[in-house]
Length: 280
Image (cartoon, rainbow, N blue to C red; front, side, top):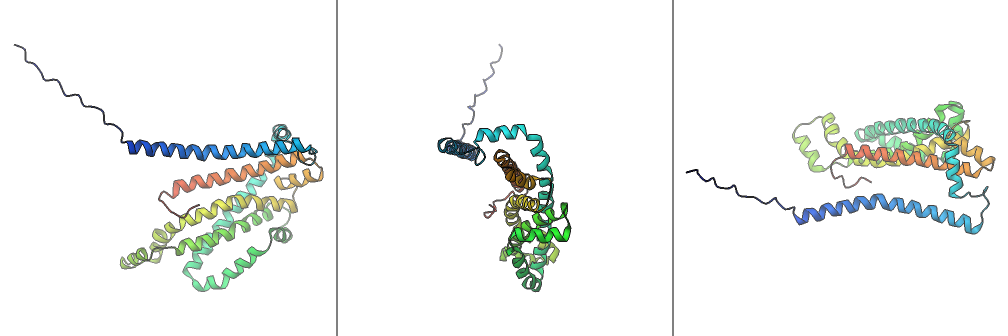
């Protein structure tokens, strides 16, 4: 007689933990809030702008409506991008030079206390000089080319990164530092394996600020002396009472600053993978 084989028991698929489902749903809602709320805020500002211009009958040469600015962005997009390119080059160049110099000087300050006491007040003094006062000096020293705009952007980026980097390099756990000494770690090992790691959240907080201020520095430099760039276009639109072009140019500069900020934020998420607790 044929033997009867016992049927394999049917196992029910494991049910997802209700706590995990709730946590996943909360994470999705939080991500949606972070995306939708800024969009809603921007649309509300556009509506208020449109309503004020329409209700108060504001003259177009004083404050154009959002529709007029949108048409200007579309019609003069090529010219706007051609002027945005040199500003972007100046801002990125100043960002790299200023932050690199700040990191090097912060490293020197941490390892040489005497140097910090001597030159940190000098850095504070230079930072206290208004940007519009530094720009003509740099223009006279470096000429009317790319160099003064990059230098202004670099100077603006320099001080916030210097302060944050010094603080980050010094914000080392005493227990971790004691452990490194017990293990006979060299200064090089302490710096790269302990101090540098602890300083990254502070550094990226400064870099995100510098991403916006570098663009401001480049634009201010173009105000002083330039024929191309966002700053020069702002001056030309102002003197010509072309308010639509003025608003469109400002929006282009702001959009680049936001994009620059988002790029630095993305790099931060790729580099700083632990819960820093201090990063902006």
